[in-house]
Image (tube, rainbow, N blue to C red; front, side, top):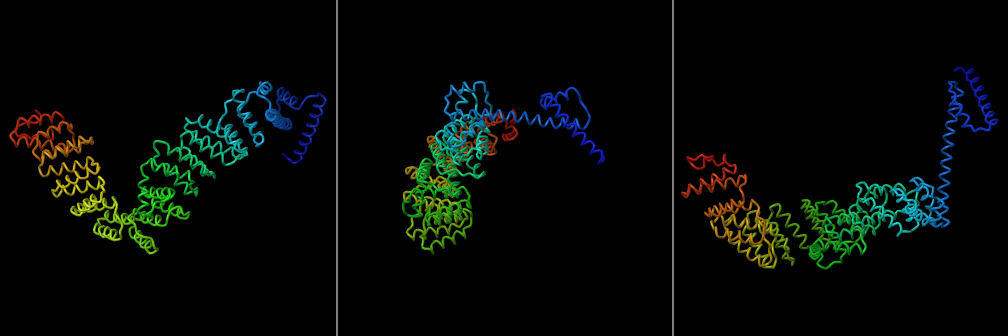
Length: 591
């Protein structure tokens, strides 16, 4: 379109608009009605008329939305003012009876009453809308109401709503994120405070959902909010009272220290109770006795135990970092810090660095202790350096330090593993003389060594002494002893040990029964071997098949051909034809 044409079109359009205005004034009709009627009665392709229609469509839509918004605002303001004036529920019902509430109106009313002075009005509206208008609040309106109550310091009322909301949505798999996300999204517009998130975590604790509560606390940290010590204590308390903690109580406490949220006396009491319940308190008290040689405050016990726990999980770097944090706050003793750091380095396999740190500890005036010595003894034994372990043991005793049960266990097991059965036996006897009892694994290693050199009777004698001191042997202990007596052909001792084990109610796994049957066979007690083989039920393991073949051959060697044939046919009927055919000369095992 040329410039001249554009100018003409603009003037024509201006004249059209002026005439339209005059027409509206003369007819007393509104602009919407005139244009709508015009469009309905006649369509046109002229630019000026298209322009007028488009302009009016926008004006009409805006007018409708504006009217709707004004009407909604009037309703919201009316409800807010009615509650501010203290109207009773009957009056409110009469006034707003025709009104159908929706999420939008409820949200706007609550936000209209968000100031602290109006908080009780907001709570009243929240309950009125449920009781009188039968409105079912969603997560968003719950969260806005909770924010308003927290902002006005109406904590008790806020707690009630939090617990109600969590109970309402507890069964939904997405409820935990739904609730916390809604609280986060409505935080800024509700004039609230961060303590609302403490109420959320405490609500999960009250509903016996501490793991979810801890997960939510981590999620909140990602969004810049950190819960209070009281909230952490509520989680710890619930976990401590539950049947199984699964280590989460210590994961939470570790996280607290990492975030510089340090324990109160209530925290320490909860964690001491947790140690008692787990049966670990004495272990950590003994540890501190060995390191510090004095009884320590419960807080030191707890803080030492958390570091020990992290190190035992194999998280060496985390444990050392945690220890540094505690040491900066004087929450552990220097001797404890040194000892645990040495222990950490030993566990990570860095023995040279651990030894350098040990020498530094001594130079700084700290005394050596049995815990550190035992850590090095264990490391040397695991590497097969048992003579160096012996040297440390002598050095420790010369210093007036008293080895404890773990120290002896390490030496018993270490020497037995390296073939030093006599040295292992000496440490075991020395341990018993001091009134200590070895662990089952350490004693089993000694029994294995004694059995291999044909001195199983000595192992059995020691077991008799240990049983009087409360030692509890396991299936492996009896299996090793039975195997040892089988090697020297003492079948009666084999059966005696089997009956003793059965009397103690120990589980008889197939591997143990195979050892029993083999030992009875070695002692020439074929009837008993056959009896327990049938009792065990034939299996397809190579050892079981080998035992069956040995029994058949033994029957034949003793001239019991009929018995051998019967047993062979019985095995074939169990599906072992291929492996047993040809054992009896002149007889097809398949018939």
